[in-house]
Amino acid sequence: MSNISKNWFVLFTKPRNELKVTERLRSIGIEGYAPCKIEVRQWSDRKKKVLVPLLPSMVLVSLQDKQVDQVFEVPGVVRYLFEHGKRAKVSNEEVLAMKSYLENTYSAQKELEVGDTVKVPLLEQEATLLSIKGKKCLAQLQKLGAIVSFQLQ
Image 1 (cartoon, one colour):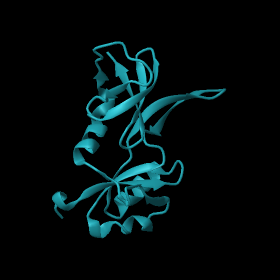
Image 2 (cartoon, one colour):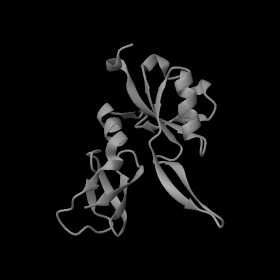
Image 3 (cartoon, helix red, strand yellow):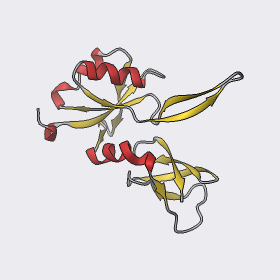
Image 4 (cartoon, helix red, strand yellow):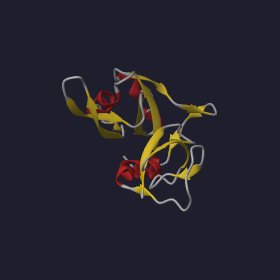
């Protein structure tokens, strides 16, 4: 199969099923990607590092057009994300950038404020700043609507 004829689509999953759906998609031969980060969660008796999806209830899948119905064979898949009446496509560059964006920081030319529009490092996507706490920023991508975090330099 040629990668040229494949497109990346966004799938909605049942809550907290992103990693399971990705694993099940791989088992039937479909490339899936659920971007995750490690967070420290604290309970009353302990702290634990857990894997948290960056896109809650979403998985990115690379498919040919004739394979789009195969994803519904996987338990946990709900539906595709649609944009203007068509399945929303994500470019290969966006997926590759998302895979490595956690390692990068953002260098601001001016003082940033909540509501400002910035370009997220490596994703090269416009995002609106939702919060700034110290050097950690949360921003909502304008195209996907996903919330991403990054560090200021």
